[in-house]
Length: 90
Image 1: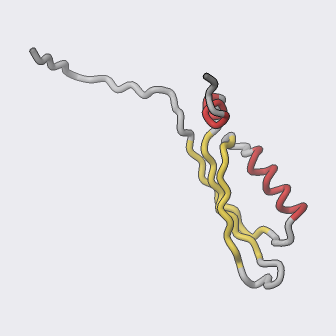
Image 2: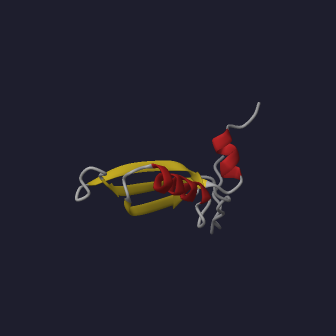
Image 3: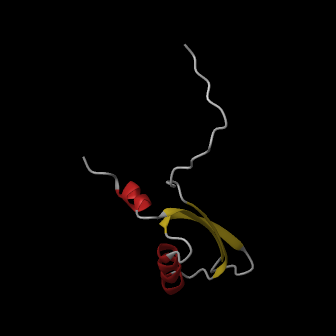
């Protein structure tokens, strides 16, 4: 059984990236519209997000106004915590 592509990306260091994109409406430039984008990407370069934003700039009419990015790795190394005492139950 193979792992899903999303899980395989996470094992290679990708994390879940969310970008809130504000852009100007092509017909009404004084109005802003929002778009929510989410994919797995590498911090801090964000190559997948950059590729999407380059596509947006080249292809779509609505010029970008602001991009806010959030990123979280979902799979992390195990965290160990030392315990000061041991209790046994019989």
